[in-house]
Image (cartoon, one colour):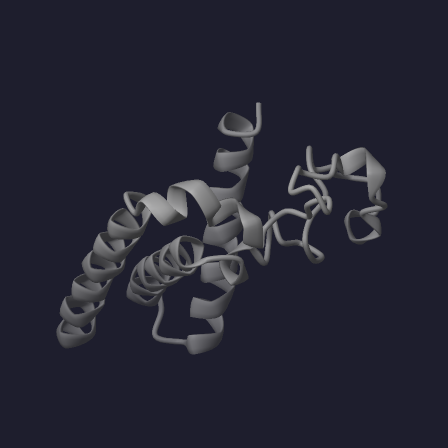
Length: 129
């Protein structure tokens, strides 16, 4: 178990480093958002009100139109390397914490989902306000 924790912590740090390197890349700063949002032929963002976001069942209207369903929420890690790196960083951290509570992989999975929901609630109450 201790070996899994040590290796996991190493990879959490590695993915944090990758995220920070990407965040400071001038190309990412200029173009990083393009995988997440739709643009008009002239390159400007399409307002969210111009697209029917049926997949949210009326519970959420993004400020801009998403490039594909959930590209600004649950599937944001498919939009660019920074979000993918953060996804792995959080999933490994969640796994290490959850697995320390139980040796059941099924219970570990449910705890990981619970942790993700808690993180989303905290994020949505601060960043989206």
